[in-house]
Length: 503
Figure 1 (cartoon, rainbow, N blue to C red):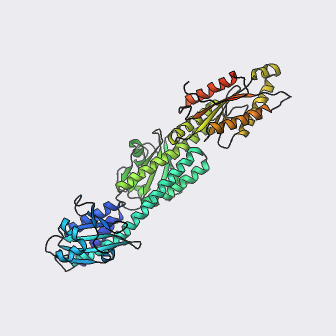
Figure 2: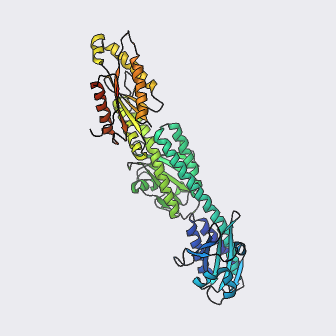
Figure 3: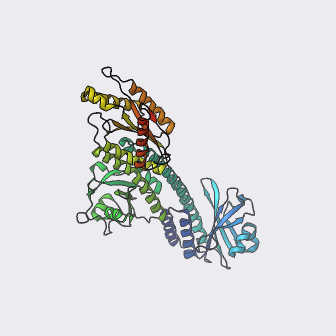
């Protein structure tokens, strides 16, 4: 510390080294701690980092050159804050105490060099290098600290920006997640996924992001969304280690943990030729898992350079992977529904099987969000008499007319199904008991007005509400069915919606 002569070539190397160290960090405390350790190891001084409170009456002081010593010590500020907003060279008790009296007594300071850290025009931090002995703080050390403070300003600004991106990303994903629980439109999903691959790199300080999804047979990973390649022209990624050299996607899905690669061109788990072609070095492969633990795909992120990924970056990527898993669970559900749905041939409504698929998925989503919905079981009164007296063709006309009336009487997003014979079931989303009764009564009155060859009929209905009547899918149907039976028994052509405490 005592030498005043500077070796500029060596100092340049140290400048470059600390720049690289700070550029690789995503965590404020970790970056400052590494800077303190670097100064101590290269120059011999101890380092304190002052974090001023909002009113500038106190500072939280962290000794960052030696882990967990003097960390987080709250100390009062004895002078106007403006007095610290300049470089300070202080020597001995008489010079140090007016500025750092408490710090001197705690940390045994004898020589001090302090530099203000001004970020975005705000003076909130101070970097202090000190020694406890009689040696001087060298010009080389001072020059390095000045440079380090400039790098700290850039580092702290980047961390602040990253934190804002993190918050925005989490808010955006929570918002999108809530939308997807209630709206199952593929166009929305495409927009959402494209937005995710565009914004994830910004949030974690990276450049490239690709989301690859498994095909239905789980034989290939297919790049669907990317911010740097044309996903529609990308090759399939076989899920067989014997067919492909790059195993990171396979390993991530097997382990259900992120796979971190520091040099894709040398790592045995990677394809060096592909890595060179795509200019990939350090990268992370994050598994995307559904709510049920089913493998859906992976997310790749990299920066086109060598990186040391922080624990915070990896944790955030895992959070993002979880959110994408939830979103893609909805996509997977749409695919299953489209492949399995068989509408009722006569009425065009969902048949019992397809309604059950949709209903079970909706109940699961509501169990997580604690939302409300209602279930209506409806049955045509005296329908057998119509068939027996006037024939099945007329009965079929009534079924079609009643089905159409039900569809026209509910709201967009509600689901109407033919449950069997002359029985219908309706899922009324985001609806309580009173609202469901109004919809049911509207349907009842409209069906009462139907005339075919001057013949009319009526319906009876039973209502159940989630979660008041039950929070379980099967039990809720039983409640609605029992209320339908009670409506029939009470005289038909009515809605029974009484709360049933126990079946």
